[in-house]
Image (cartoon, rainbow, N blue to C red; front, side, top):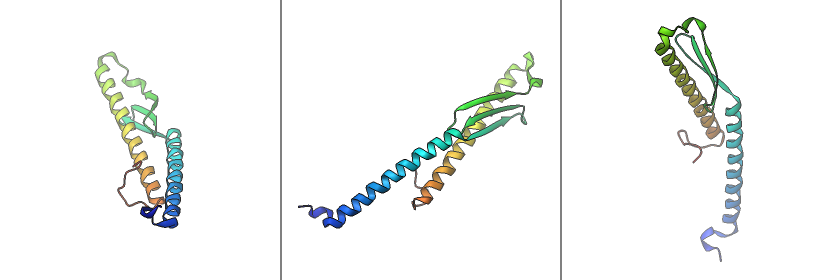
Length: 117
C-alpha cells in the first residue's frame, strides 16, 4: 500500500523527522525570544551618541552627550544619531547571525546553512 515509503521503517523515519522539525521550531522560537531580550549598543562620534537596541534590531534608547547639542551643529548631530543607529543594527544582525549559527551547529546542520530554511 505504501511502497514508496519503504515500509514501516519509512513511516518511523518520517515521525522522527517531524519530531526533529518541531524541536527545531521550538528552538527557533526560544532564540527569537532571547534575541528580543538581549541588548546591543551602537555608538558614533567616539561615544558622543549611543543607541541601545534589542538584538532583533528594535531601538530602545538614545543617549546624546549634551556637549554636542549646539544649534549650529544640528546636521552633525543628526549624522551621529543615524550612524549610532546603523551601528546598533549591525551589532544586532551580528548577534542574530551568531545565535543562528550556534543553533544550526547544535542541530548538526552543515556550516553556512541558513535558518529558518
